[in-house]
Image 1 (spheres, one colour):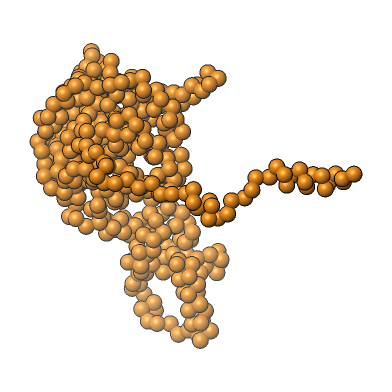
Image 2 (cartoon, one colour):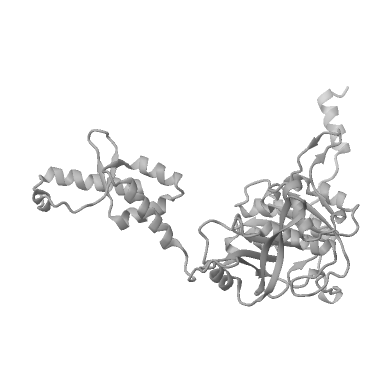
Length: 405
């Protein structure tokens, strides 16, 4: 009689599949190559030639209040009513538009603005929710529902544009990390390609980023800019004489067309119904130049970063904070943080003002005070100090330096 363990071993040996050697495995693997002569080339399919391509992701970035959302709605209106683009080219056939916005209300803002720009409202649909297999409804989440939206888009054969406002919401993870941003945006890019629609993502500039490359001012990871085939930027034009406020839209990056130039535009309010007013876009003339030069001129900067202004603000903050004498260092740092002043900027301001750091014997903490020239004769002469006091002072200054670094 065969023992049970022995019988089990024999059964396993009989039924086991023979292992393939490493050479056998590699023999079944290969790289797919495509010859250039087998590729059928095709032109870019434009909604607005040179500015808004179909089948791709585009970004529209700018500071708050520069008119980004209204600009996006102006493009939607042109698409739905087969109007003309700012350069005079026609939208030959009307199309439909999908809009997801987490920042503006449909009834008081979005629809009134569309009406102010003569959009065909029957061709505009808002993405307002998601219903699961059990019939439960929740808010639409671009970070996880783009796949379901793409399926829904199949029922809109003339769909031409999807607006995501803000596009940051399409990233479920940390939007400042390239890998997570690429992973989150890939579904958006795939939808644009699969449905041959333009996807326009609305986003913001980073604070304190003026006078730098406009594409690098886009908030979040640079993967946003890398994945977008077109990056448009918008800005107000500072008018020292207080005239009519002009705004501009310019190309900051393009992989598929010219990457400079743009157009002026104005935001004008009109009464769409009795007592209901809404703003719309009125286009101006074409403008030339790089996006950096155009934004520098619009924002009234001289082409240099506004770091000096930032430090000047921190200097003024310190002067006010220390005007009445010594203040605990931690307290000053907390107030500076609340005022939006970084530790590095605060350190530069302290150096510029020659702020003293002294250890309080009574409070047991570091105190900050302004260096002032006292009229007191006694203070005007160096006091004699013992060697021990000198060592203690040097040790304290060394400790404070380490604390600041």
